Length: 155
Image (cartoon, rainbow, N blue to C red; front, side, top):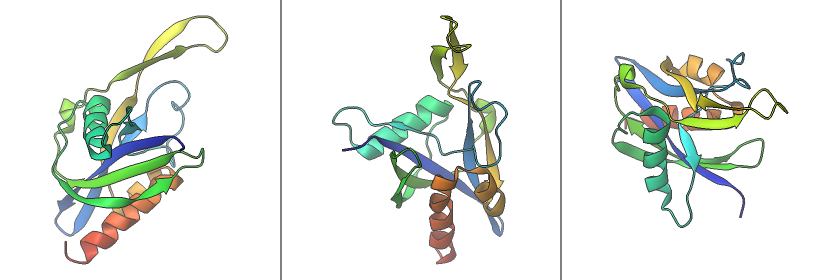
């Protein structure tokens, strides 16, 4: 079986519009990328971990925010690199001033032998549907579209 991640797509209703919480990946490789670079907070499943538990854990680890209530599961998506992403939609108007990302370590600059720490996500923001679709990784855009369709049915 290939690599599988689990995460949450948080949304909030602001009058007639719906906004989606997206995270911008941290570190030097993503620093100058914006459109098509944002993603849902997600991470790898641990051995024998239940996917929804992993999604809730990863959301908290990557953002420092408390996950809001789950509203419904979304269809799995496959990213360009082959990773499968399992995702749940969750409704909540989160206080983004409480954002505290986890960190990762990597060799930087490349082939320097030096290790540096970077935030897993360097920022989070709410975007309305059209803007979320412009900013999110293309492989994760179906998650936004599916949630918009679900909400349009009166959920």
